[in-house]
Amino acid sequence: MTSSKTGSRAKAATPKARLAKVFGAVNIGSFRISAMIMGETEAGDLLVLGSGHRASAGVKRGYITDMRAATYAIRDAVERAEKSAGQSVQSVWIACSGAGLESTVSKVEIEIGGRRIEEEDVEHLLMAARDTIQPDGRTVLHAQPAHYTLDGAHGVANPRGLHAERLGVDVHVMLADGAPVRNLMEAVQSAHLEVEGVVAAPLAAGYACLSEEERDLGVALVEIGSDVTNISVFAGGMLLGLRAAPIGSGDITDAVASAFGIRRFQAERLKCVSGSAIASPSDHREMIPVNGPNDGWEEGTSGPVARGADDKNRIPRAELVSVVTQQLSELTREVGRALKDMGFSGSRAGQVVLTGGGAELAGLAEFTQSALGMPVRIGRAPSLTGLPEAHATPGFATLAGLCLYAADDPVDIRAVGGRHQQAHGFSPSASGSFAFGRLFRALKEYF
Image (cartoon, rainbow, N blue to C red; front, side, top):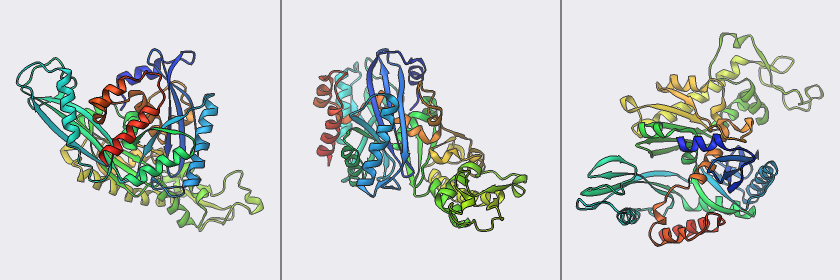
């Protein structure tokens, strides 16, 4: 998640700075597949070197449905980012938005006896927490210590050097179905890339869109993708709950195409260019063209005439807005139901942050705020040096968050003990083979 440290690193970098590390990231969505290459300077500042995207293929509702098509699209998106960056990458971090994501919190305590807490005590605690993970045959994507407790008192960031009778830790565990995760990894590997790690999309989006204070006080993050909307709740510095709704911005596009009897690409353009979540009095008087300026309407090659259109194939904007808002009402009902199930309602509710490609619809924040009765804002990636304006949008927030996550490289309790010591035996410039191997060792050990 965005922190003051990350923010300063992002703003201070300069294109002429010498790079110490390079991170590659790929967000495999149902609407588009995007890639980004980010560098970290010797001073610890971050710089976007290049980014690229293309239309998705072989992906539906976050799952790989056609391995060959997905592999080609991933390779194409990465090559576009490499061309933009002027350098290639051999390994990437990837986001997982489907695969039945589930978030749980594990709480563990050990006796200290009032003495001073040493590094060995913390490692012992984390190893004890690791043993409590019960994946029940599923894949553990993350098992991260969120914060520590001393004699039941929360909010301890670093217990080392303090005295306590009991030392505890709250560990955030993210589970996923194994087969879809392996399909994602295989699609990337078939594109001649190594996998540094698989990151749950809500965590990556949170790194880009949420401040440390928001995560601590309590906030809901709603990532609206093309086919899936992930609703997550953060509090106490960690992700406490997660729900996935099988509805997204692509369903709005389909509803527009069906209502007017037009093709999907026409409906998508209408939604993005003229669609809105808020109606205005002038909508009934405004006629909007179904075809774009280069669709060849005069030659009759652009597709069917829209249902209810005039002789120039134009429809009243009010009718388009009506179709859009009907679908949004269904989406916000799903979001509201999920937030209520996770206890994020009434006096316990806070701000809602919308991100993802679907959050780019005009007026969406106002519509959602009215529907949910909660304050709502649009979440974007922080200001990153080198990030193109076209990619500084909610639709690319998860991609930027992947790079920020890679740069932060948070502790995973499965890497403590012997594996933790092994990790420190590698130089900072080592390739991604260790991280990739660490992931598979964890999969092998637990599943």
